[in-house]
Length: 68
Image (cartoon, rainbow, N blue to C red):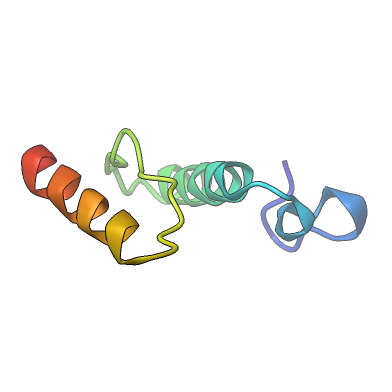
């Protein structure tokens, strides 16, 4: 995994999926932080949902209040 400047076809920013980009980012940050002995824990999951209208926003808002 190249964290210092992905180029070419391996660049995660060329991916069509947000999950792949976030997985790459979290892996790179974890790798670099552990090398300098900084320990932390990432949030286990993230919400991957595009809010397209008010109804979608309200549903997302209600789910967030239940989770928190």
